[in-house]
Amino acid sequence: MIGMRVTQTLIPTLREVPAEADTVSHQLLLRAGMLRKVASGIYTLLPLGYRVVMKIEQIIREEMNRAGGVELLMPIIQPAEIWHETGRWDVYGPEMFRLRDRHGRDFCLGPTHEELITDIIRNEVKSYRQLPLLLYQIQNKYRDEKRPRFGLMRAREFIMKDLYSFDKDEAGLEVSYQKMYEAYCRVFKRCGLDFRVVEADPGAIGGGETHEFMVLADTGESKVVFCTSCDYAANVEKAPCDPQIIPSEENPRPLEMVATPDMRTVKEVADYLGVPSHQLIKTMFYKVDGEYVAVLVRGDRVVNETKVKNFLGATSVEIASEDEVMEAFGVPLGYAGPVGLQEKDKIKVIGDHEVRYLVNAVTGANKEGYHYRNVNTGRDYQVDAWADLRVAGAGDLCPRCKAPFQAKRGIEVGQIFKLGVKYSKALGATVLNENGKEVPIVMGCYGIGVTRTMAAAVEQNHDEDGIIWPPSIAPYEVVVIPVSHRDMLQVRMAEEVYQSLAAAGIDVIYDDRPERPGVKFKDADLIGYPVRIVIGSRAVEDGLVEIKWRASKEILYKSKEELVPYLRSSLERSKNNCI
Ligand code: ATP
Ligand code: MG
Image (cartoon, helix red, strand yellow):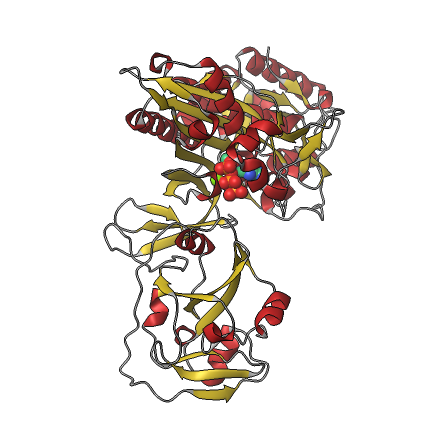
């Protein structure tokens, strides 16, 4: 029998908002007694929280299996050797948790498992006849994130589902990728989440095409753009942008240095000089694989570090600190500009296309307290290259149909990658194909952040009283509460209702605590059970129990006989609505 009594489990709800919690989902998961912090980015999932995780995992399992996936379990601890073979032992950097055994051998706590699974495949698979293979696990991952935050959202230990596909050729990968794309859509729909699939940048993991699955939420760390006319959607890091040229009738005027005391930001300078911010050139200094590069964008734009990295074919792009820029170029913060910059020292200067079209622009004069007016490309400064280097936003045009973009924030809950032969080549995972020729296996990898999905669900589904779980991933679907724990008739009836629901296979919890009803109602709202059943005097008198839906706040009454069929069908319906 399923079912649980509140007095038998551990649900330590909190009335106060914990000071450590930096986002709504983090606060609510702590307050609802689902989560506790152990160390920065490391958490215990308390019984209620773990039930949500298990439900998400079950949905993922069903959909991975439906798509032909097979589950296995690899170790968390991985030997350094395989990471040396792909070169990632060095590339991964401080994000990797490293350790030594008593014999002095190096290991890491797996941040991901491409190396390990490819090692297995190279040993066990020899012929194309054994392919395709889709292998997955659901397991803890370890990443020593620079800034762990938002609770489960960006943790250092978290649960991930990772699947790896192995095919004999590109056409096979195409099929596997498509299967996973569809399986992921089903997973997030079944979890009751409002999400979008967006094109993304392949980044450090390497390889080709990749999509991210974004749960839409204003608090999301990622920004995405959607076309308002076709179905194109992309992470802003990836979305290409055409220059939006602001027409100017002006002729170039002579270059002029003007005093701008204590004016450092784009807005301050623009206001002070009475020009629009798009008339300014913003000059940003980066360290690109250890070398300085200056990047120019219009004052109203943001540099896209991913585009800079891709354009320069670099592995690392880091913003230079104020001190570094001062020391290397003598340029004070807020007063940088391209005039004379190239001559100053060996520095590459690259500019976003839009900057090229500015007439009589304003830039920093590379001198404390001064800017230049009437700066014109070619005459006053040169660049090494023009490129698309800015972040896309609302109003930019779709690369497919040229309709304007809409911008939204999202939480990346999953990502799928076409890896190609990057790992199989590095590790020598090959098969003999139909012609007896040895070829590298073509791979894909596919991750879902299970614990992040849980947090994203809360971020998207809550109100001022607490969490509103989508029924498919709620810790329990129904809570039963007697109004008075001293009224024996109410308690007996509540007990009966609870027993009958549990016997009927409904996922129910019984709040049998000797507490005031207000406390129980508050907790029920905070925890976010989809259905609340209250047994009060009316239920005892005329046999009608009160049913309240957490999401719609709808209240209705049913007799004991109607209750089970009603709940079964309406819960089933609300879960299937999502597919
Ligand atoms: P991010 O860009 O957010 O750092 P990622 O692109 O490095 O994530 P992947 O390697 O694609 O992450 O991992 C697959 C999934 O694992 C992500 O889509 C995300 O849902 C989850 N995930 C990644 N890092 C974390 C983390 N630090 N805490 C919780 N979940 C995470
Ligand atoms: Mg990712």
